Image 1 (cartoon, one colour):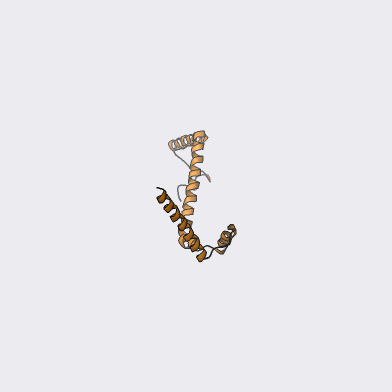
Image 2: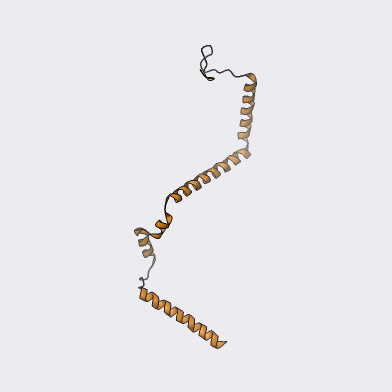
Length: 121
């Protein structure tokens, strides 16, 4: 038999509590009713609930991110990503030789500009 059992002499579902403890419980319940009726407490509770939700989302996101090897994933784009990237560009892709030729021409323009600036000075 534990302290929540009614026992053989008591009515089923009744528990005897000392009068002082009962008064303290009633006063505590009244204080909680007043506290939860306060608009300030309601606002604080709403802010805490939002903070707790964001903290849970952050912890979940960190756990998911920690479980994946993002360097490997980011280093190897999917086929769908490659298709998306190709669809964005309207010009034909350049060959390495064309890229080198454009870079050489660009540097030549820079060198011409430097030469013209030095001769004008």
